[in-house]
Amino acid sequence: MRRRAIWLGVGAAFGAGASVWARRRVETVAERMRKGDVTTSVVGVVNRGAKRAARRVRRAVEGGRDDARRREDQLWQELEVRARAR
Image (tube, rainbow, N blue to C red):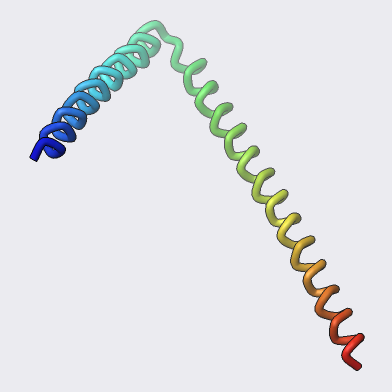
């Protein structure tokens, strides 16, 4: 029963903290929009998204290359084993 009370308290504290953070974030964005700084904000968001996407694609390509090399090595080893067995 104590654990439930503790987790309830932790959840309530986390929820309150998250709502305060979200409110501040919304107020900051609203203030930027009121000042007419919308284009700068939008450009910043787009640039960050593009950089994030480029990093993901780069990691995916590198991972694919590594997997392909491992598989190729494995296939060559299997071929050598078959050649020795003959």
